[in-house]
Length: 343
Image (cartoon, rainbow, N blue to C red; front, side, top):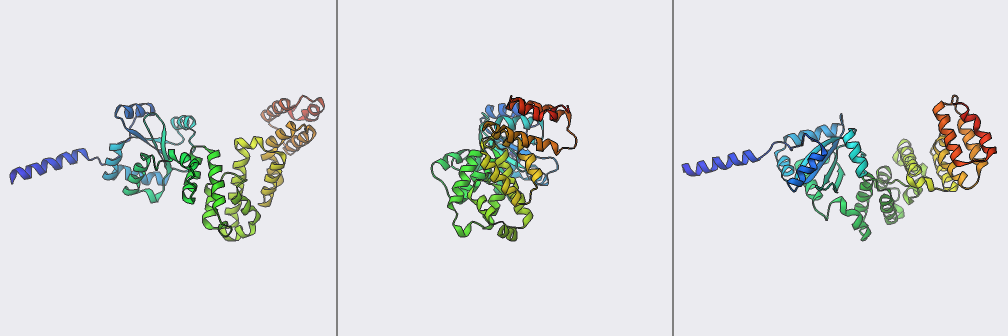
């Protein structure tokens, strides 16, 4: 009996020694984290948090006090936390084209810095089961987000997958993937479902392209959307999507006609002409110069600066550089030189 009791006590001691109360977040730097992961043949868990974020604080309590989460993550990963506005994270995000839409953002990497899985986390994931499921998902090639582009190309186009894949594309700055996924999603929708609550959420959170059929449907039925979802929410959603499209890389390739359609949609939701001019003038005048419509481009530039009470010298320098890169036509330069004489 004494031997059995001694054995149990020793077993409990060993288990207690191995069990860790908190996730062992490394207090070092990224280079050392990935080196340690390689030495231990582990993957890396990076939590991206923001100072003052209440959700991040809630997860900190879980990571610091849940023994089940601590043991699971410590066995599987080398863990590290990065503040989203820190120089270290900005450099890392630029290298890997990571865009933070919300915090905390949970990301998982192999020890060669290849992204395995990335997902935002909210209160519904702040529990032991969900965090363990997230960890399992990150290391499963059939579930991790790194595999989703391949699944999409293989023809996996069910609605839930497309929403998750399209949203994930935003975190990794894959605009093309987002557009493809959301076009496929829109084509799945039946006419009677186009104005559903879930589709409005998709417009709010996922869609980045004003050429998407769901967006066009909303713009054609604004009164119905205002009544159902609130004018402020609808206006903000429409404006965000239009501006995503305008300021994306593809915005530089838009035709004058496409830009005119975008401006019309902004007017529909109540954006004033001056604000529209300020947002569009550079992209639109670039398109006009390319078409040889220099007078029209010059008139637009004049309108921009004539509406400015005082031209900052730096703006005047910028204007001169921009104009002289676009044209060497003496008549156009003479027409616009009043702007950069202000410098």
